[in-house]
Amino acid sequence: MQTANIHDPRSIESVYPRSAFDNDARQNARDKEAVEHGVMILSMPDADGNFSLTRSQRHVGEPGAATHSIFLAPTLDSSEYGALLPSDTDYGGPVEAAKVPKTPGDPYGSFVDSLIQAARGADFPPPPPAESLKGFRGG
Image 1 (tube, rainbow, N blue to C red):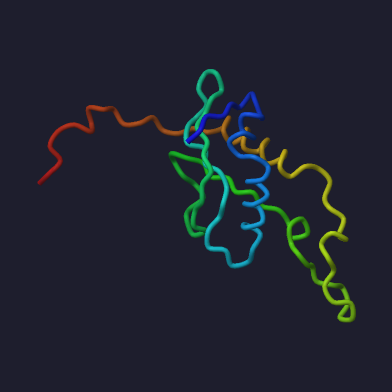
Image 2 (image 1 turned 90 degrees about the vertical axis):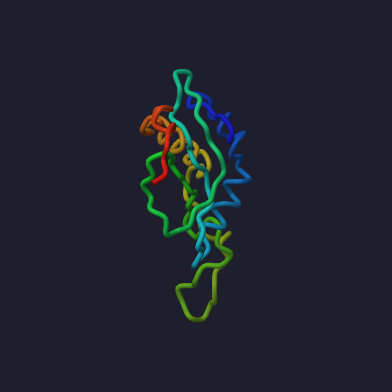
């Protein structure tokens, strides 16, 4: 678990660099993947904007709404990371993805922005008081 800051995108980039984003996006773009790869926000930002962030994975069957963490996975369309795309005709065969015009903008920068917004909006319940963890629990 590492610390990042909502006011400093470079701190997020040090925890989750572009190379990790590219790798996770490629893995998430595969068909029939049972595991999503991405990052998990583990704490709300403190008064200075610092929050806990870590690379993570989760099974695709896990519910999206969690109460004590937020999981974000990079997803891109297949033209960005796919090796080949289907052709419009039966004669030509598949078209190389490099020849398909790419969408404008920076997907990594957009992901970092969405991660900052998710961290700002994080609202985790407070931890239980220490007294509730003491005492006899048996039967």
